[in-house]
Image (cartoon, rainbow, N blue to C red; front, side, top):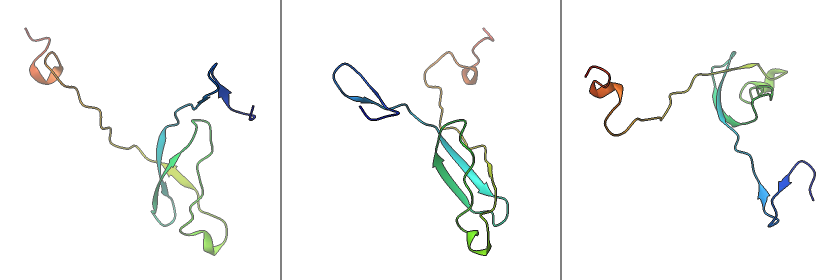
Length: 81
């Protein structure tokens, strides 16, 4: 069994979903999306790494694609009845 992976009874590898984070370089404003665990360190910027060490990147707040469908939500006056 490969180290660091869980297997179910059928022998299939169980893969834990990792969130997609968006980062922006503090030096050159380049943006990158990275799949990583919550506790992982932010990546360094590859765009401006040629002039020495990679610049630090800050985590961005991305727009959510979450959409409430159907009746009974705040956008259709739920709670005002």
